[in-house]
Amino acid sequence: MPLESRIFKLAKDPQDPGEYQDAYAVDPVRSVAVVADGVASAIFSGQWAAILAEATVADPPDPDDRTAFSDWLARQRAAWAARIDTTGLAWFQTAKLPMGAFSTLLWVEVQAIDQQEEGTFGACRLRCHAIGDSCLFHIRHGEVLRTFPVENAAQLEADPLVLGSVDLSRDPLMQFVSIDELCYPDDILVLCTDAVADWALRCIEAGTPPDWNVYWDMTEQQWRHEVVALRNQRQMRYDDATLMLLRVREEGFEPTAEMPAETDVTQVATDRPPVDAPSFTARPIAGQSIVSPPIIAPPIQDEPIEVELVEERSDDWKEKFKEAGGQLAEGIELASQEAMRGWKKWKKKAVDKYHEKFDHRDESD
Picture 1: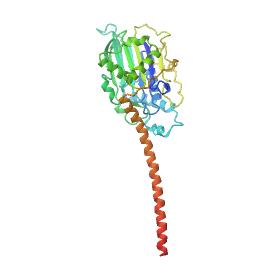
Picture 2: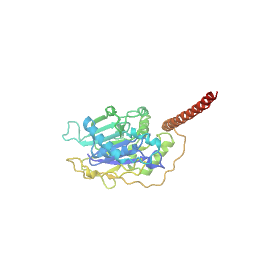
Picture 3: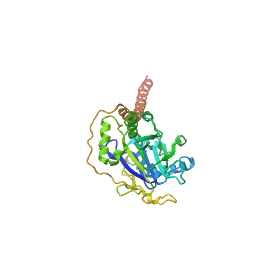
Picture 4: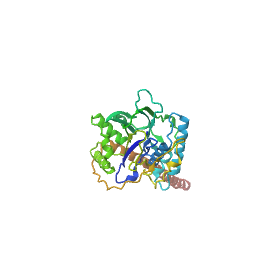
């Protein structure tokens, strides 16, 4: 079943879009769409999120087959290690390399039902897999049918499970959650990272759910201004914001020139210039013909966004303080080690000088 798509994004700092650490990809013909949220406190997480997004839309893994998924994940880890540039890193960045990068991952696949089951009435199959707190909202006629895997805003307060770019012997703990249900033409599927999900869930819980249809006619610039306004009003977290809208279409619907198959696998946070993404046409799925393969979305040129400086939310400064505290602790530890080494050298010199003086006096006596 083909998908119609609209995608919006805004970096945590609108004046520094290069620090955007989310990633997304969608193939509307094969009906596969992905969002991933790189963990900002790790290193090269933007590249890791992009690798996961592009690999998933090109060849979705099977999280139920542990062996196959382990092999798939190992290939993506090798791609991450080959892509990153570790030259010129600061000492505190180098210290993070052994732990690698981290990212959430959520993707949907919409497929036609080969043999119509009784009572389906033209439905298609919706499968969604997730690890972490990126979120799916399933909308029909303006009503929220399901939120997945997060069901309420309070659940977003906890640290999410994430996939790591380095094998830290924790993979058995990384269990995906999945749904397999029916959807229908004109259903809207909303994929978003946690900042947008948190805002949307709070709106739903307050009885004022977002009108997702409004976003189909919204420009990228309007979206950015709305997010900045929500941040200034403390209604949305200061974090990378990514929103993907998908509308399920009848068989035979073809994406137009105004709605190309979209990806954004190169516009990610980078400490070095990004590496060109591989062509999806080089990796078609066996037995399937990609009529309109995904293309890399061009950067959007808009007027600068004026950001109002306001006092940050209480939960925002905690996150920043925690990250800064980690870097400060690393610096203090190294400084302490240097100071200890210096004190030991001074102590040795003082003791030697003492013995030299008093041993000589004993001899003269």
